[in-house]
Image 1 (tube, rainbow, N blue to C red):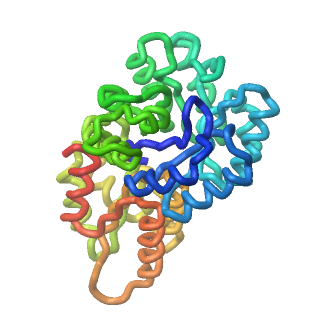
Image 2 (cartoon, rainbow, N blue to C red):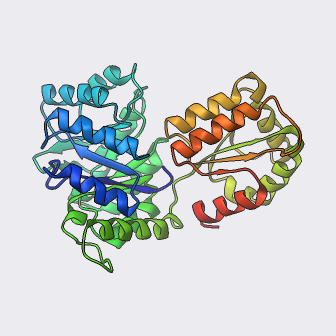
Image 3 (cartoon, one colour):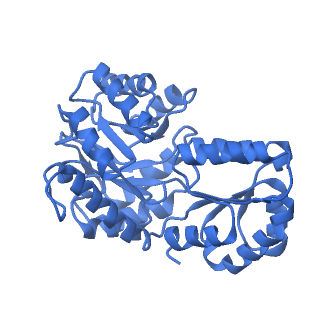
Length: 355
């Protein structure tokens, strides 16, 4: 997610009883990342909720709030059964991560010590950051769910410290109920944030009453804050042979901003770009003809790319046309921006990177 927000169908750390009705309002507001807690509704209803979210083109999140070991294990099993995209929270990553490893569920545990209900983050900036570093070493930990605004201390310092200490996305949670806090998350390097109770109670300024208006207001604040985000974007760069010169020129033109991003490329394109701009940090996959396009597709499907820049050659037939079509389909399915020409790529840079 390229600095976005997750709408949580929850109030006071529990899934709201009318979550299914509320979901229609949230979708009408334009939210695509939608989650719920592991308490408040029976598993059968949560499963139907997850199915509805995904059928509508969204990504489904389950957040753990239970603190005892058996409840957390049960939540992990539920995440697998519900087929949510991401499991947020939990304090037993060493135990839960191996359970999730054979499954496509992304895992974002809590760093630091979590106590009470509603949950509170205890410790110091240093101890919480150290906890995040240790968790980052676990293979099946994909990011972090940081209860930043449930921390009784310097929240901005905490967010900046954790984000700079780990090379994985950090989602901020806990009482994010105003524009200033959304902007603070962006400036600290957060990948996104969760909102639940505040929107359900109508705490954001909106031109109309109702949850749909609240979601639209939060999306507007998110878009504005995105321009101030310091989190690196994960951008794929690839081109057909006849368009490699165009891509090389485009990358050179935007080199100053691309140096601050995480770049991924198919093998041949990556080699060409590194020759043109040697100081770029590019992770090279296989060459397109050897499966690189499929590797990019897998990254789109798991939410690990924020944008795809694919300069396609419109002339003649290419053996890779099928790969481009498959990649485009996945980008549409997972709402990942894909640009196939310099002008379109300029818009991606302008909208996503604040330039």
